Length: 115
Image (cartoon, rainbow, N blue to C red):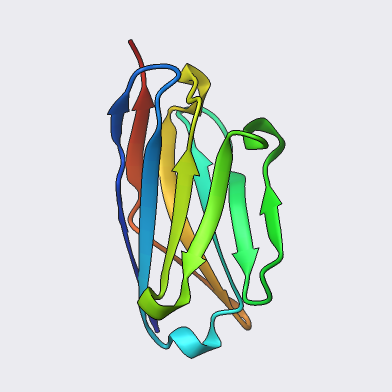
């Protein structure tokens, strides 16, 4: 079992920044990738960013150049630095951890970009 605890969401003005954190606990040795997904009302869930145990990073097209994913292995934590936020970034952001044959999800954190 893997438990994921997210933090860092909130309300920010357009052009602002937020940093999300996702702390993993449990059977973390089995994790081979972690990432962030988001889902806005009425839209499908989409990949925001992911990072593998080998350090391979992928970003969704809509966030490239604005968001940065990173990890702190000592703290078993993945971060998502979000800059130049836009109203269309408003969504529930969920942390994801992948182990062989299974995905784990955090509870989600709301990010609202509005003036």
